[in-house]
Image 1 (spheres, rainbow, N blue to C red):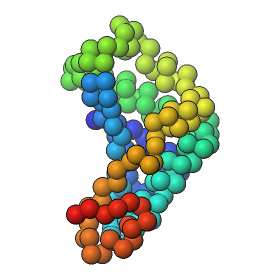
Image 2 (image 1 turned 45 degrees about the vertical axis):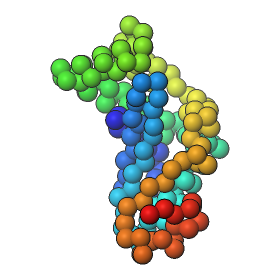
Image 3 (image 1 turned 135 degrees about the horizontal axis):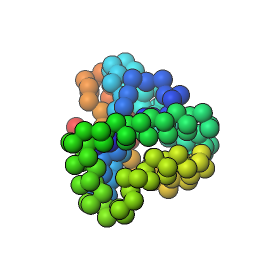
Length: 151
């Protein structure tokens, strides 16, 4: 899983990751919150997804994420394990021989409109699965508006 920096306006203790598999990927958003604020946290996450789909990030937000992703890429490839990992990722996905040398440049070339376009194409709230871990009796009623509840 690749750690990703989320939109800086999130007011949640969270992390998000993208797991890349052969010709596939999935995105995970995690918010470590208590039962009392589980529903508001989900509401905030869905709000931010909707906001990203409807308005591009600001130049400042994009620059912060580009700096984070570029720096993480360079740092993760400064050790043998990181180099092996990125080379296997490159091979698995059939990325060109210039992947390592052009990654940072390509990340830096992204525009706010690129981010919004990708969010509109891939972040589909109606297809998302929400998984909640907590005391069901304490949070079930607050989650009814999001999706049908399972076990």
